[in-house]
Length: 308
Image 1 (cartoon, rainbow, N blue to C red):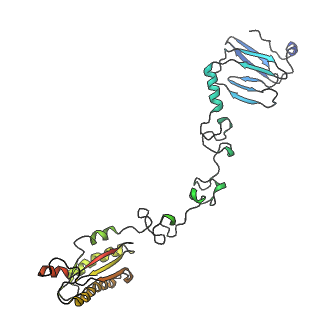
Image 2 (image 1 turned 180 degrees about the vertical axis):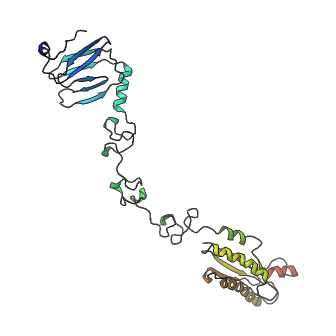
Image 3 (image 1 turned 30 degrees about the vertical axis):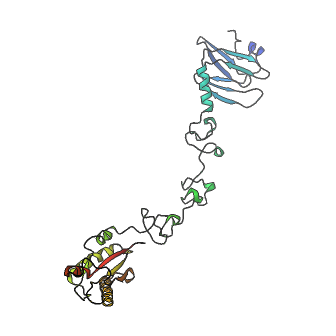
């Protein structure tokens, strides 16, 4: 291909306007031809800086894989030099890929992205908007920019009156500290529940008596320890009677038995406000009260857990 020979002046000036800078390009891996830049063209390895049309600004295009053996044509334009490089289809695809690449998928092309590997916003040149408290709400939209909060609460934490980690809006017991698993209410007193549901939950009384014997106090002592372990737990002491005597007498006796159990707990420094009592008289006897065993098992008191 016939191309003018470049130099640093003299005859070269007859063909080209006053040069701006020097460049060279390899043609067909055979001849190293040098030219003086005319009006906005620079060829360096696989990069081309160029001026399009009469636009006085420069743009840079990366052209990996451009065939150096391709046809290079230099011609004099109106006020600039145009360079046409014939590329194979794969090179053209690569050029398109590079020019449209968006590695972080934020809608800002890599060539314009100031944070190419981190998804950001178009308004911030491809970089994430500042988020001082790292709560996912940008400072510009965050009502509490220095305190991590919720997206649906404008970046502020949801109120949590009892400071149990469950927001008031989701807390079934917003004024009493509880657990997340129990929806903000105090955790169920598992051990106390297990004791109450067992056969040990039984205080037996002698006939016509509301006095506690040694065995009764041993049982109540176990319950007292559990009440201390779960200080927010409320209980009800239920008193019962056999069918010995009149109905009114048995009602009064059942209430006295419940009161005797309550008095024991209060004497052991269990808050009186935590204990309710209820007498059932002879209405809930156990077994056949025509038998001695049935009447013995009916003279009793039991503990019931008050669950909110």
